[in-house]
Image (cartoon, rainbow, N blue to C red; front, side):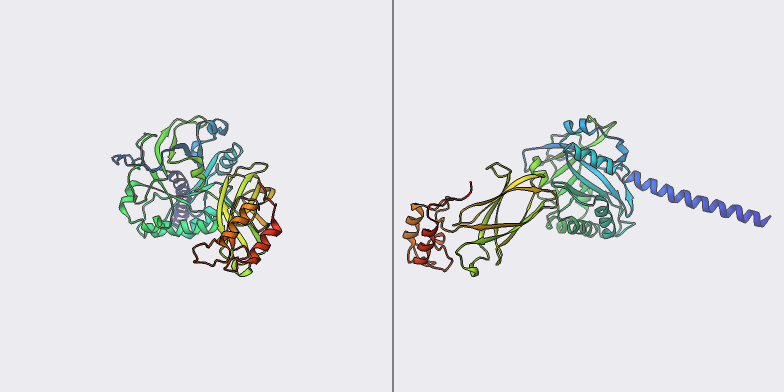
Length: 407
């Protein structure tokens, strides 16, 4: 009889352990949605502070608890969506893949969030789990740490470690999602000074209100409701306002790397390092740039930049201060970026108008015989980078006379 009782007790304990483990997993999954705590943000008195941006766009954040989403309808009703990808050290949102695919197919601006369980796991463990689930970010897609759970350790340190780890994995600075109580309870200087943006939970149910004052110089985004009705989503859904334009939202997202090398004709090799060039990305066949950046070449003429331009086909144009513009046509931009671009720039454009003409001769003649510091010094007239304007510069200009750069 004692043996039978012992066996029954053992079976009951094993059953309870299995139930408890399963129940914990279910509970963590249920709690791992933004603003799961019913009092999260509700008890805080709303303070209307100044907003640094006049533009506003509106979106939603989603998890499996919102069910299957009709992204055809949602894409017409919302400008962006933030999708739960993961939670804890191993949790995966069951609808992450479906939500990501649906939003991407409709061309929506999207981000992905991870719900943290700091009391259970190290920040690096959770950050790497999130990065493994997401895999890669497409152009303009952003990442978010959702921090809501109680933690007896260093809250700011945990968050910064997670943010730093994800930045190292994706090359993009994630946003941090907290409520105003969390903002007021800790010194967030380490996160703010590292340029991680703030997504503030503040349920005042006013989509047009300004954001309250926080430790951050401005609030990037605010979750203003947990019960909005939005086309394409069955039942109430979390709703958000981003204080800026879609282009500004994309600046928080992944930017593909564009890199190449520029050969500066008739120029001293020792003077190449630090030479500024303007790099433009233009939709193929267009003369209007969607991204224009002025960069400094290294000693070998290499350059690199990050761009938030959408996927597509682009012409890339490069121009130096006294070199003619050169354009490389129809390069495909994806999250993988564009590499191995090569440019050879023609020297002689003293006045920077992208043509070598009599006007350049006039400008060079005015600086003839000068060196840096002289009253008539013109660095653009020092075509060969020798530190003075001489006959050698006239020779370079004469060789390019009558030439024009690419439009």
